[in-house]
Image (cartoon, rainbow, N blue to C red; front, side, top):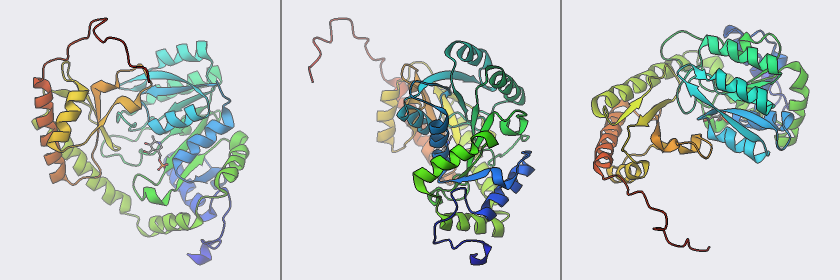
Length: 356
Ligand SMILES: Cc1ncc(COP(=O)(O)O)c(C=O)c1O
């Protein structure tokens, strides 16, 4: 490794170690992107890229379009920089463009943030038509798109859909991805592909954040990928089996209590509770049954009904444990469903609120 470039224990270039940038550019070219290694900027996790783009493009009060629901880390970052968030709901094909157009026309946001492939938390993938339509709108209203894409390498079935970046002819897309989801999140190595116009500003921000991403981590990633060509194939086999185990366990144990999607890739199955099951009751029963899940709430802005949803994550557990977890969840669902509906408090019944 040491003869591949600079010493991995010294500071490296802010843009990233050249051999890794080249390797990423090669992989992206296979995925249909027409780019040079000089356009790849290595990040300390793709999370850092969200911050850098927000820092480069937004001032306090500027609007950002986000999907509803979306990745909470992005919501946190945009909020921390004082952005105003404009949620746009999803349907089976991704972000709803009819709603988006209204937001673009009347709110004049400065950025569109999307996780178009195997979205976190819904697992939804934006269709090709939607991707084209989204670009048309972005071009028309002159709003850049941040395509956050940690999961597209993890496809278990179906055809590859072109990345939005690869469809863009006008340099409107900034693309983010990461090695966190099929190598090691602890190495903290992600990357960005930015149009030339903003790349140097982004490198400046990167330098002021952490000088460079750990060169040691970058060399480890480079070597792991260079030596283990079939690692991703292995991961895909394992994760696909776990997804299938989760979907079949849901089918056998949870029908009638909730509905769920069938993601073609990624990490997540998104479930919607049937009417009459209260999230609070379900959480109590799940605790009793010894099973954990994430409620939909953190993925939405305030005012949205995230409490009707659950996000289930399948890559981390072997099939047997998934089956056991879903049996426990089914027990919790049954118990929660049999509880009486909470009484709606009438005005006045609450008394005077305590002063804190
Ligand atoms: C949509 C999305 N973006 C970004 C990240 C952050 O990943 P990283 O480990 O590369 O910072 C995640 C992690 O869960 C994610 O789901």
